[in-house]
Amino acid sequence: MQEKTSTVANNSARFGLNIHKGKSKVLRTNATANTTPITLDGEALQEVDNFTYLGSIVDKQGGTDVDVRVRIGKARAAFLQLKNVWASADLSINTKLRIFNTTMKRILRIRWPDTISNKDLWQRTKQLSVEQDILQRRFRWIGHTLRKTTTSITRQALTWNPQGKRRRGRPRNTWRRDLEAEVKRIGYTWS
Image (cartoon, rainbow, N blue to C red; front, top):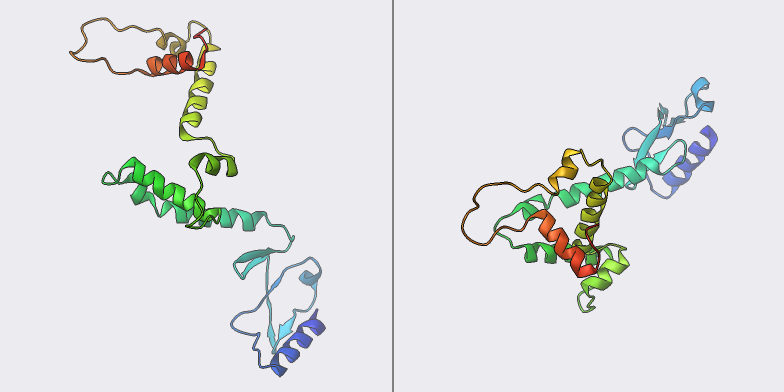
């Protein structure tokens, strides 16, 4: 390894490239643990378990797990920078959805003159529409609740009918009323 390092350094110097800037690093291996250190221009290379090179993490095992986790973290951090946009009360939901869809189209490399419907966008990304996702979650929760024993509080809450007078005006839509309307629209029954 020392011979190859010296050869690279000499050939780089011939072409005017300086490869020794700051602390150079070499991956730590079992073989290098008990031998003399590899040197470059008289300085020992620092042995490390991993390092970042051109934005990618190089690991001594050669795996990509750490690199993928770091890239996902960077994407999450970039998306969270839009937290103020998502939490803003000044922007309508429609505007927020347009920003989200624009971001998705950017990720998919769909340029301005190309038009794509939201339905096609969901199919390309293998995502459900928000309405379908909410409906699926509702059905999952109701299935979970209906499988509980009849003495379970969550199961009893489905049929709970509070007594007393209600306020004037149209009654609020409850979770159950919304679900019953959706079930009726699809053609299912509550049972």
